[in-house]
Length: 183
Image 1 (cartoon, one colour):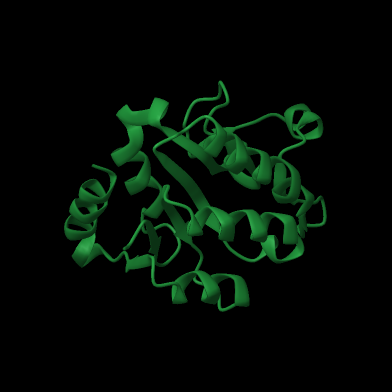
Image 2: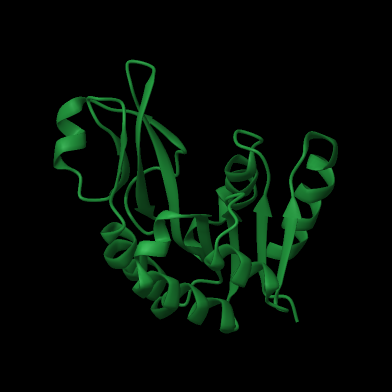
């Protein structure tokens, strides 16, 4: 039985936006996390992991000041002054695992994993928590990066997982499938 549904597709095709539109009125029933893109003066400067049970708005993009970036402990990627990206896999190991375990304990009907990719390879605790969650009876809804790594391949090979490749020409059909899945 399929209890886990993931979207894949090119960057900026609208995978997270599609999930957000489906889940918008169901926030009390949804646990897990989403990744928020951070901008400063229109420039992309980072990503942070937000628990669905936080008081933060379910917003996929946020304009921030430099002081905010210094204070947050949930940054998973940050652009440095020399234009390189610094990774913080420990955020998945701590806050990511807490979001997943908290959602299960609070009896959430749907658990959001938006999104899974490469940084998590450096957080084995998080990978274990994801696999435990996928093996549970909970409905899991998420986004997989178009990465070819053992973590993503392992998820896609599971018999209880269905993956849809989102493209402009199938957006309406995939939206309908996601809506049906969450009912």
